[in-house]
Length: 235
Image 1 (cartoon, one colour):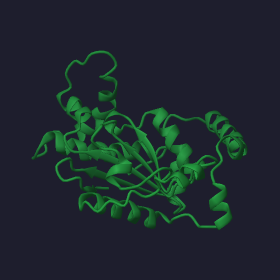
Image 2: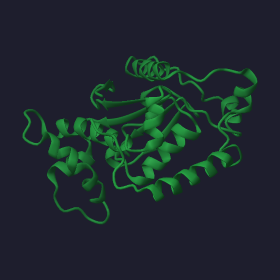
Image 3: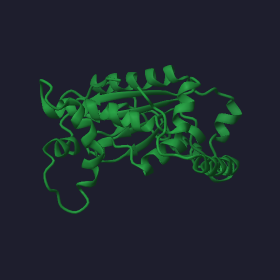
């Protein structure tokens, strides 16, 4: 699978590189990446594998109705006043039924949430995720689709939509084309295909790709089942 960026010339790369260097220099001032408590304790960040394990174990607690509701105390609120250090970035759909902190049984400051209809990788979404994986150094990036997604359904039907609602359809249509004519439920097939397609778009980012190649970041795709609450890895 080719993750090389397209349509970017040398001048653009140099310009972006300069901007990123500037952001990196300003990051401790504008976006502090480590809390005073974490610095004092010297606690190491999670490995990508440990971060994924923590998410999936939280989902098991959620589906088993053994919730711990971690990191939701007054002390946690005060700890996060100076900085955030989430252990995972989750790109999920803007859907009231799929809230990452709830379905993974996590709390404040644990997950860097990016939510948009159809969990699509728009430029703004990519920039938000780059901030999380590069400056906050989250070791895990998950693209989370879900069963019976309205955005994916709209893309499969590809009919007229009012206002700006149809803008996300264009970002999902290439994924639809990959599974058109396959046996099974068209929407369910498209949900999984869209997760993989949006992962491909994210991996066009040099920042995300370089951290993944260095082993500092794991990028996974998953599907949330509305009927059971279970999160299953699909990529």
